[in-house]
Image (cartoon, rainbow, N blue to C red; front, side, top):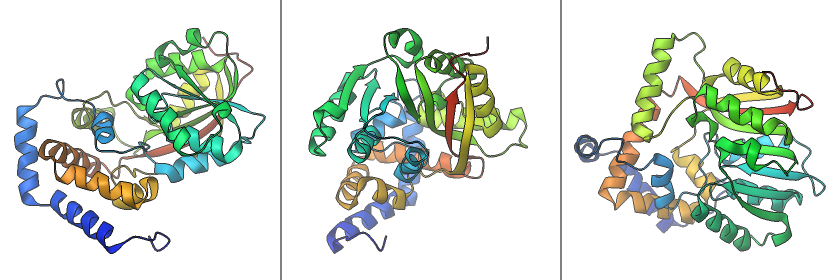
Length: 302
């Protein structure tokens, strides 16, 4: 934080909002809100964060993304595709830093429009950014006429079942020689299947979306079965909703705006506190994982 130049006003607003999130009154509103709204009717948590202005939605934050990018020899001669790129903050930063041609793909066209806007605001050459609407479930078919040096997937595969992960990665393996992965993992290798299932159910309710992370060995195995060989990996603690990480990811002005938007909207505030409590209750069991893997000449296992 010493490297950030924060005005007293920004820090006062940010601190006040964080205090509001920690009050007993807020905790009681969480209970009431949760009772009124079933997870089937609620938007998933990524959508909630985007509504309040969050642009970086990664389990290891921007720091994890930058480290992952540094593991690959990305430059202006490389072609890259980011799957389920959302608002494309990582891909845009990558194109700006390396000169690589980056294709941002997502099913949600509104997110792709925001990604284009972010690229323009960042002054990234339009020739370096391509936008593609793509359903990750059908990646093998939809990329039939395309091939990339590197594919990047961040904070997306953890919401698919193991069978679905395997199918997506197998479809991708013939279209991308290298894979950079930034996902959620279980850090408790000695936990029973029953304990892991409890964590999945608890987090699925809080996030209102499927939650299917794997252990380190689980991620390695599913990649191997899909035709990728892991070359490097690293794990760390979950950084989602960590105030310091939010400041680092979004910058002081946007972080203050996000905190204010949360603090002044009762329903969103309740949802954020509920999810933060769920994450904190499993902080020793969950973390992020970074993986660099290479395709085995497109020869995926059946």
